[in-house]
Image (cartoon, rainbow, N blue to C red; front, side):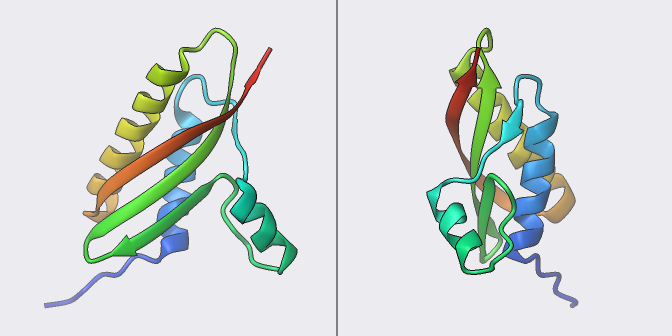
Length: 105
């Protein structure tokens, strides 16, 4: 039987693309760890990290929204959209953590 393995960066890129499509997400923003990785020449996915282990993905997203969007509802919508797309496209079961870094006025 053939095995298909998805790298952390591939999963992070899918997650970031899906999150950016959710209404109310203005952008994704690097968190502190990504900012530090950028200093040493790594190429992180802006606002998204993922760790894939044994058929599961742990995804962390940092988003920016605008005033008028309920941040809690936005986070739930992002979590659902990302987890569903990852399951459908990769077969991975995902746990998605979303941080709202800023709310634009």
